[in-house]
Amino acid sequence: MCRIKKIFIVVGLLLISGIFGTSRAQQLDYNPKVLLVTAHPDDDALFSATVFKTTHLLDGVVDLAIMTNGEGGYKYSTLGNYIYDRELDKEEVGRDYLPSIRKRELMAGGKIVGMRNYFFFDQVDDEYSKDISRPMQNWDINWVKQRLQKILKEEQYDFVFTMTPSKTTHGHHKASAILALQAIQNLPKEKRPLVFATTIVDSLGDKINYTQLEGYPISQLMEGQQPMEFDRTQKFGFDNRLDYKIIASWVIAEHKSQGTMQLLMGRGNVEQYWPYAINEGQNLDKARAFFEAVNEVPIYRNPNVNFGN
Image 1 (cartoon, helix red, strand yellow):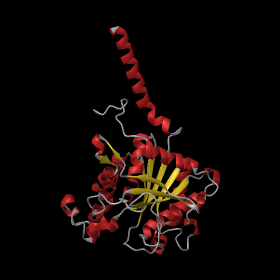
Image 2 (cartoon, rainbow, N blue to C red):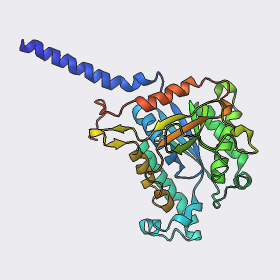
Image 3 (cartoon, one colour):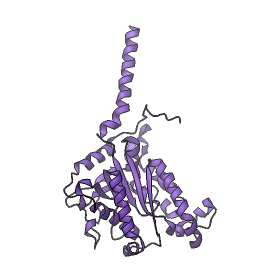
Image 4 (cartoon, rainbow, N blue to C red):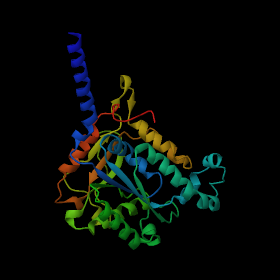
């Protein structure tokens, strides 16, 4: 009898191990590939919870194409002076040292969420302005679009996430999104990834005051579509005391040269991904299934991963 009990126990453990070991693969029948296109070396915090779940729990890959090297952030680097032993809030010092500092901070945050690769475009980060014409005139626009298109062709991403190019946001944010859309538009329709405008809101189902950036019809959102969403306040862990806002806070904390970035700690509950109209004719069911998996796949202790190393 004891021997039979032992056999049942072993079989049960093997079944449990098999369930946990394959649960991620059962969520999607492919390994998702995502490209983020942003302007500055801290904008990636916008997507942090979705990126974490994509890489750690869905066996996906996420890359980042970043337009500027972030030297224009010197005005907010006063506290960074004490971390990096440089007067970073002096323009001549900040513009010299911040590009390398901010890249290191970016990759430290990227390591947390599992970022695979970084494509640095090193365009000028002059100063804060809502005017999109500044980067469109000062950046090497043709080269940026050509390189983006080359990356898209070679990597064949499933999804591209941009910042929402709304009227009230930074001109660099607008420009990075428009250039990504233009690069995608130049691809054959059958080769285009699904592309979304990303923002953070307080509650599930919140509406945003954006449909299109004036003068750029390519930036129009798809009519009649609701956003794909990920709720960072979902609870998990012991006694349901943890949530995904922790991940966003970890990423933000790495950007120590940017004092105002730290003020975003704990703000924003829901990541929203609005489909652009350029997706018209493509099947959004793939995106719906992806975000369903992002929302539903649980955090668990994977027995196939050696957490001791």
